[in-house]
Image 1 (tube, rainbow, N blue to C red):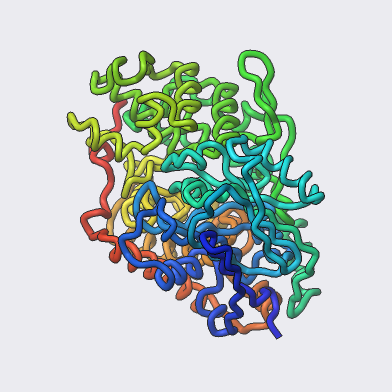
Image 2: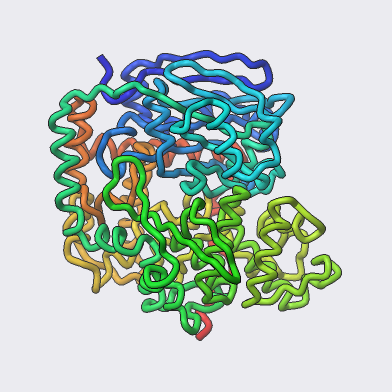
Length: 582
């Protein structure tokens, strides 16, 4: 008997309308387990090399893992795996929330989607049954309106939806996918892949209870986490201030990316902090499935910027992308930029990164008003940034259509040495951590198969001289025994990167939340193994899941090699080889 997973993987061809269900054996599930590793398997098996990411031939894999839906904090995530239209490389984009567990409760472990519907459709997965439904009446609508309409139509207010807005429909190369309109598969343009297939949403509703090998042991671990997670400094700060708490640390370390990564500090940067958010615009906190950390911020603003709390609140990456990196320290403006991106299904990191690049191009005279439809693109101007978000989502005008392609494509079109300050790797705009200060993160940006993503390796400051002792202790099972300065880049740092990359890779394959697990957070590696054994009835080990992480890393690299990527592509942007400007 299979425990923890369903043994059902759905295959849907939107061109023909054919729906089939595959029933892999235990060897398959123990080899790939879920998430990015399972997704990479299907991309390599089901798709030829050189496919246009926005063509019907691209494969879109929506996948949970063998442990998703376990009622313990951190087991709530799912992955969207496809060929990225932003990078033309492997894409594994993860999100928390409720959709992944609901997929499992509806009877499936993954959905593999091919082809393109002639007209807009959405999928409804309900207790083992899958149907393809007309979505013409919600095509063109923003995410919140779409979710409400589909739930009413289904008569299922508790249905969980993955969906896109106008950004995905208009094939913005970095369009995202949302669930609950606030949990986001952000990076790499998976929302555009959905749009290219005329797929507006995937709704799930399930009443199936997952079978666990040792249910009592699973519940013991759940109770332990709820009782003890606040003893961990990282989980405590996540509970109190969310990821916005990182702002204060970034300011202190002088690695708060500012004005397109030219500077590491901005005056009054603390105005963007988690503390300031709690004091001003925070309305409440929310959580993902079965999580007691409740790191999600919900904000409300009235006045100059009316911000709807329905769309949640900004995480650290969004705060830095639209705040310091665009030369702004107005938290209410950042909240509005975040809301617009969630309404329209735009990745906040790439949207903010592409806009900050455009602002510098304008500052240098490479972009002119004749090319921007008359807009004056100035750092520190919130109104022009909000206007650019609107134009990007709808590809409106010359500037909206241009910036919707991403900073790499824009730099290639503009030339005039703009490539030297286009902040991306493999075409993906960098997350808001500076590799000149966090060198291990820099290795992750350069070497990751997906490009400039930040959830590739544990960040250097967590093992620096000032880091809490518990972080260092919990990393020792990986053989990481000593503290290393964040700025140090030598053999030991590279060794740490290799081990931590495979650690993060197995977490992506198990679709685990890095904000609850070791080496930094509360659930240690030993406890994770104990949980997996209780869920699955297997005798697994850290060795086995580290090999899983290595397998995902290798499969992703193999995919990229098939697509023409080589060692020369594992490189950081030129600006990051220059000293930070004081």
